[in-house]
Amino acid sequence: MSKTWRPATQLVHGGTLRSQYGETSEAIYLTQGFVYDTSEAAEARFKGETDGFIYARYGSPTNDMFEKRMCMLEGAEDARATASGMAAVTAAILCQLKSGDHIVAARALFGSCRWVVETLAPKYGIECTLIDGRDLANWEKAITAKTKVFFLESPTNPTLEVVDISGVAKLANQIGAKVVVDNVFATPLFQKPLELGAHIVVYSATKHIDGQGRCLGGVVLSDKEWIDENLHDYFRHTGPAMSPFNAWTLLKGIETLPLRVRQQTENAAKIADFLAEQSKVAKVIYPGRKDHPQADIIARQMTGGSTLVCFELKGGKEAAFALQNALDIVKISNNLGDSKSLITHPATTTHKNLTEEARAELGISPGTVRLSAGIEDTDDLIEDFAKALAKVSA
Ligand SMILES: *Cc1c(COP(=O)(O)O)cnc(C)c1O
Image 1: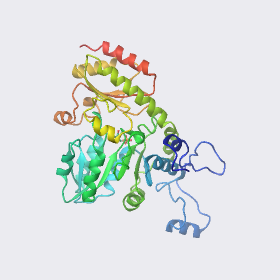
Image 2: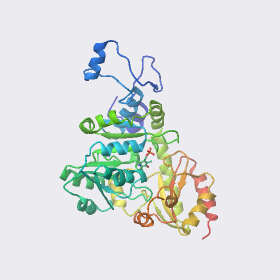
Image 3: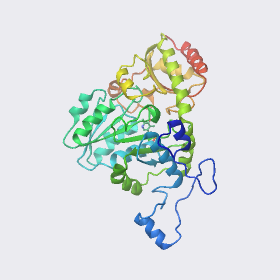
Image 4: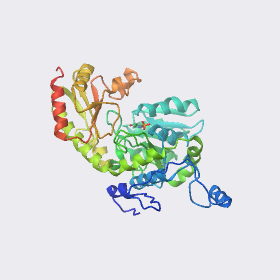
């Protein structure tokens, strides 16, 4: 296993544990437990004197391959695979905090992530301050003597705003706090939060890593010391472990991650440029375009655009619904990162639980639409949009 492999190679070969049969494809080890040759061997395993698996809630071979492959891609020392992205986010945040601690989070968060820090954490005496994460001064102002964790997504859902990750990391290091980055929208290919100074990275593997709409999954990555001291026991005893079947599905998904993300990004960029020229479209936000309001930060911290495009229709909700209903290839779905192009109207779906004001704060208007570009033929997708836009009244 070589650390110098480039991502496309790591994602096909990294972490592979071949059994005595020499199988080409990774094996699925669907087992809850493991047997020991002797009582002494069991004792040694439990004492941590010998390597090996004990119980699938703690770890198992197929999950281990997935975790190792993710570590290589991310440049992380260690990882834990979880049953869903939300299990990863919840574990990453709660495992390191206690009553009295304080979180500062950028308010533009995936709905369930926002619930974890805004509603769940305070029930256990962990307070959270939500800020507009685009301005570093807001992070600094929100710091208290109790601040232990900074939490952010970048780019954000659905308006694709970005947060200056290295700027936030510098502030965190001054007070000994940890930065947790939900890197789903950037994908592990286009943004490396650990290199930018973040301490913990989380993914919903449900999105681009599976990328084919099959299973849920998540992963938490960090340095070995942080995982040993914070996540290790929490993970063993609260049980967010991923099913080995899903770990296998995700291992197969991850092999084609660069191919899919490259095609999705190319499609997203071309659709963004097409939409920007249409008279019924008020604005397009796309991290790969020069007119993105934070293009300078994007140039510093990302190596690619995005598989997502956010745009606003002049005709509000009525126009957004008409467009979505008239699309043929592009499907209406709140999921993202899939090989199928998916479109959603955030105000009535993913962000319906926020108040009108909270949505406005995030830049979500009744005409806002989010596209997750798939891997279909670019021209077919553009023709689908052209045909559907023609049916939207001006
Ligand atoms: C989907 C998503 C999650 C939650 O992941 P699940 O796998 O659905 O639990 C968290 N954060 C972001 C940014 C997401 O897109």
